[in-house]
Image (cartoon, rainbow, N blue to C red; front, side):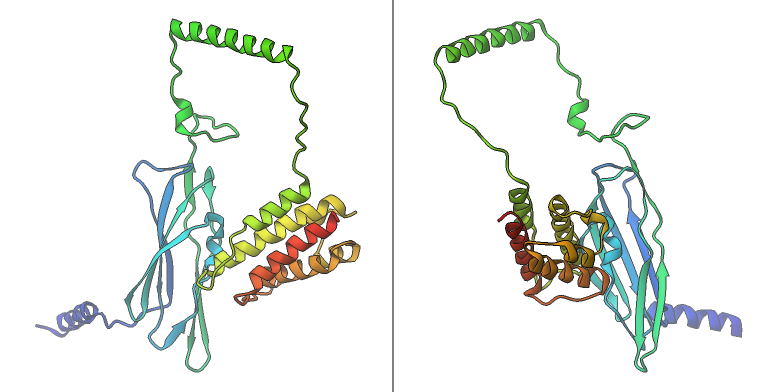
Length: 288
């Protein structure tokens, strides 16, 4: 056996033993159905990470996956330097879904940071509607043909007669006057704030980020009803300058949101609830 064959044999045996040095790599792999992906379908995808043995990887940045709002299914350590993260998401979009680049960083013992990035391939999502697709998506149940039968017309006519008799009976006896006022914008905003699910201690960075993004959006939308400036397009400091009642609560809430959204702040266990309560207090003070 010559030297070349011996070299190839050694390489194969080394690979089989799993001791080949891992490289810094990051890949996203879609698991798509054979008949394609359509609006409302579930998609499963894997994020594969590997890093050199003399480095420690930084936590995976799930914020790049927020457009899909996925759920982490499992994390499997293939070996000491290889990892597979499996996610599941329901796609509520039509056309091409594009995720931002994913980044993997690993730190050596001397403090040197290695980094690599991967741009996931676009996800093509078909429409439930015919071609060309309209503005809205509908469930499959609406595509079923409507039954037609003479008895249906007779039943419809009988229903009209019954409703007419009921209306005439009610018209003869005056009913009690009741007035049901629609919910106020403040009550709608307060209900939306209370409905937000607080991220727990084991929540992923993406879930924490999503909570603060939704919290700020609800507060800004409500603030825009009473402030003299468009709250959606102004900075937090500009809103603080013109806020009247509840200005302190508004500052506490939006400052906490900005710290997480723009300054990579990692909130403590009690901070999300405090920001939520400050938002509720601002809504209550604005209508007091």
